[in-house]
Image (cartoon, rainbow, N blue to C red; front, top):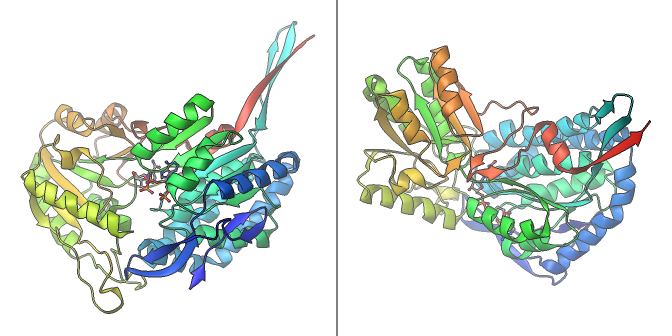
Length: 480
Ligand code: NDP
């Protein structure tokens, strides 16, 4: 059985206390590897290694950092199949999705920031005849990156890549539920020749490792993606220490469908935006609002398409819906289906555990579930479920649907389907969301900043914003 190790000071090392946790394969319910149950001692070692590496790394020319990161990109692409299989085994997602989305995006993250760091400049301002001012952007030092389990390597690298490209050194923690691809990345970093201590990966739980990173006095910034409750806790600890914070948190995203939409394209994409990755994407649209003239047609066709999705072994190329990431998360989603029934919802599709055979007989699978008949303000429609469960409801006016869409505490993303250009702009501007997709979903240009509003987070990742996040600005004013 594979024993995952920490990556500290350029080496793969066992946790100080030698304790390990079981790592489960969600599709089988079996333990298939072990990961370090690290604690503050391991974090201390990692911070020391990162501190030692910082002076040289921060002074390494951008071209050299670029060359190393591009070697890493080539290695990720070389190992695409192995990484995709590892991601699927760890997380339960179809291997086809890991192969087409998660792993290529991890390579893109490094490629984008390796390149971006070569093309950033510092501004200068001329106070005519009096002074010249310029702004220096200097890497912050040691930073902490903490990521969740749903898109393991994709989100892990989305943080690490800009931090390293900006010249920081990093102490990072993947989710304890999905540690494997971060471990494989450690090996690739060694192979790529990333200098020792530039990236340190400490495996283990949030309460032990995550909180030790957040509360460490020498960690200058925290980039976190995860649940809103964890984000609150991190902000409570980090804010009084004046750390820079980027918090990418939960969502409860509306998908608004007007009767004039391109119907077939909307239907195909709505199946995807509802159930990709078993609904475990923070950007999935879990509340579907349909303009009343289209409601019955949509409901009928949506149920047919969703019922045809193939729930199966994530390793099978034809599987559309894989396993839920862990048993506790499986239980949480099932409890929301019970709640939805209690709140008066009718189950139009799914609503049950999916029972598979053979290798997957003890896995954690849930049928893609569609619920109707709920009010917009019930708990099912207000709380993040983060699984293959969506609600549908009709609306009559723009004003009405906007009030439903904006009624939640979250503001991560929204989707709008209409062929009416004016309406597309009008509705987009009034939606409380960090990103609005019109007639599409999950299209990302890495140059655009990304992040939520309201309780979905603070700060922006992506684009040049992320490079700036990992630097501090110093203004120099020279009298002439
Ligand atoms: P959690 O908040 O439970 O965990 C996220 C990470 O934080 C994990 O690595 C976790 O470790 C760690 N952690 C837990 N407690 C602490 C703590 N006290 N201090 C520091 N770190 C801690 O989220 P999930 O992993 O359950 O991920 C799902 C959530 O992530 C959903 O709410 C989803 O919406 C959100 N998300 C947001 C995205 C966005 O871009 N806004 C993108 C993707 C997901 P461990 O798991 O080992 O306990």
